[in-house]
Each structure stands twice: as structure tokens, then as C-alpha cells.
Image (cartoon, rainbow, N blue to C red; front, side):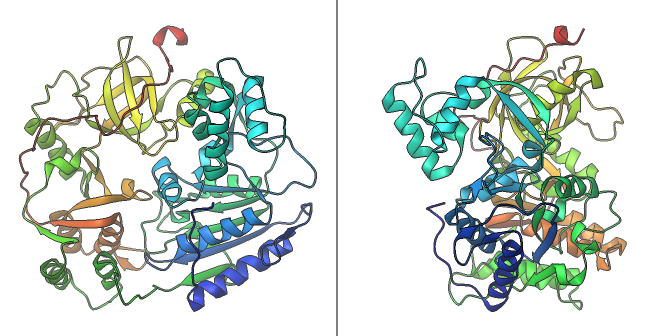
Length: 510
């Protein structure tokens, strides 16, 4: 946490910080004095901090994590938790997806996924020796194949990032090599901070309440509610005193025109045509907003085009594959995929947990690296995962325009299922962020024409808000259904690494 910069709070951030400090003090952790008491049995509390993009939620979250770390609260990452001690206080920083967790990690906050906390690994004793030493709770281990120099490099990495797998990677090892199995968490933890809480469904929220006596939620109420939640988010059902709202932080210099676009949607008088006029005006003044006459195909391999309609998504995917000359019968190295779930029978629950813990959860962004060693296997790079390279039995589905059944270029009998990822729906993009994002404007216009509402807001505005705020550096507002030519062939040179030795073959499921 050393690389989290000192910050100055706005008035409402300061008020929220004080409320969080009160909740933590009631739980036995004083972040103002930097002191901790043993946890209080049976006491539960939930506080939500909500605000639109640019309101400083992540800044506040990072500040709270830093203060808890300095108070001696131990950060639990899902990698390794160490031996339980009665007086120990712990903290987990969580996000619904690997991509959302990686956004926090890029800002110096050691986040992990909710799934990785719900399911915990069973480790080889050699790993436990290293992990305990890294956490400062054991003697320096002697591990075959690990020099003192490698161990010291691992220690320096752990001090900076608080990640056991990250530290082992610096020493030339993979944490996943030491995992012997997985189990559902039984014992509760302590303090939980959840980013992108607007994505939580009721079941995830209930799971988190079971695990964390003290739960702090950070979320954006202007995003789209989870599917099957009737437009409601989990913090909508909390009592008013348990919800703090942040306003946008206005800065004089370097403020983002992308945030200007997003916040303009709060004006109830703003129509779609006025909104597009605003984007055009901003595009003339600032190159961080682009009024685009076509989809830039080069960006689609790592940053999907965001659409509302499924038919649009399928057309764009097929256009992407066509301009790269991808054959119907196979995938090209570098093609983007989206995990659509795991198709395994209940008796192979441990295999499912293993795949999901490695990042292959529904909605995960993946890049195809080539075929695996066995038929139906794929070598994959899971974007945002701490150990991104996996090899797994795969079922890849390429949907076709005007065809009910998808085309399957190759498939194992069972395993991880994937859709193509050159374009995704705005719903599936929630929790993710990319430097450059292309939004397919004709789809937003179609939603505006339909006049639909969600949670009291025009649907087109909620779609536009979520899509626009996925961009951190540059927003492309694409107004025509045209595709550029690629500047070169697809590549995986930007990813690097070697695949982990995960093999889930059909033979294992007999």
C-alpha cells in the first residue's frame, strides 16, 4: 500500500470517511488512532458509499485500506490467510470480476474477486512455509530450487503488493502449482470492502453478509442493476442511515471530458439528439472524446465494442473475424473471448471451482493463445487475473447473424464455455474499464426510440452512462455501422507468459 498517494478529501468524502471510521471503531478498529482490539462476537454492520463516476469512491476506498493497513489489520487476498490468531484483525478488498479487481490493483489496492474469497485453496505445506515467512509469521524457509536471492526478491515484492502468488512469480514459481484442492469457506472473516457493489445480486450479498461481520460497499447507483433484480441494487434495500452519497469532485485542471459526457445524462431535459450534440462539441475541443464514423477494428481485440442489442454484437463479431480472415473451423491466436460459464456436472464440483478460481468465471475476458495439447483444449490468457495463463477444456461458440444455433469451431465434451469477445453488451461490460472504449451509438439511439425506462430513468441514459464510464482515457462514440481495416495481423505479443499446467480432459470425467 506504499504507492497509494496522500489525498485531500472533499466535504462529502470527509463525512463518509468519518462514518466509515465510526463503523470500524464500533468493530474494534480505530483508523484515526491506528489501534485495534480483538473482534467483537456477534456484532454486524453494513455501510454503503454510493456515487457516480468521478465522485472519488475509489480514492476513498484506497484511503480506508491504507489506514487499516497502517493500523495493523492484515490484508487477506484469497491467496493465503495464515494461521488464525484470536487477536488478529483481517481485511479483504473484493470486486465481482477479475477485471474490476485488476482496476483496483492498478491503483495500488490489493483486491481479489468475491469468488476467490468464497472458495479457499488447500495448499501444499511447502507453500505454507513460504507464505507464513512472507507474512512475517515464520522462519525463512529452505525450499529446494529456491535460492536466498530469489526468496529476498519475493519478500520485496510481497512488501509492496501483499500478494503471495505475485511474490512467488518474482521468484520464478506459480502459486497455482502448490494448490492441492479447493473448499467452500466455512469460518467467517472480519472486515470486507466491496468495490463495484452495484453489480452484486442478492445471493452474493447474502454470502458476503455471512462471511463479513463488518461490510463496506462502494457502488455507482447510476449503473445498470444486475439481471433478474427488477432494477434494484443491494444498497437500495439498506436503511437510509446506512447509505452515504458522494457528489462529483470538480477540478479546475485536467478534468475528464468523459466525465462531462457521463454527468450530462443526469439532466432530465436532455434528449438523445442534445446528448449527441454535446459529444460532437466536446470532440472538437478535446481528443479524449472522438466522434467516430466507423469502428476501429484494431481496438476490438483487447477492448470490445459496447452494444445494447444482441444482433449488433453478433454482426460486429462476424465482421471482426472476416476482416482478419479468420476461418470458420478454427480460432486465430489473439482472438478475444468472453467466458460464458462452466459446463460440468455436479459430481465434478471441485474441477469447476478450480477453473473459476483461476479466473474463468462468467463474464471473464480471455484471449485465445492457441490449441492445447489435447483435442478440445485451449491455451488462454485471462485478462486481469494474477496468474493469467491457463490451459483448459473449452467449448467455443461463434454466433452467426440470423442463425439460431451458434457455430462451434471446436469443443471438448465439457469444460469452460466461451463466446466471442470482440463486442459485448453494455450489461456484461459493467465492472470493467479500458483505456479506450468504442460505444456503438445506433444501439443507444434504438433504446431511446423505444422509450423504455429502468428504475425510473430512461433506459438509453443508463446504457449510455455505463458505456461511457468504461473508458478511462478515450471515448469513441461510433455513429456509423462501418469497420476499419486492421493495421496488421492479430498478435499475442502484448500478453507474454507461459500457460499453467491445468488440464481438464474428457477422460477425467468418465
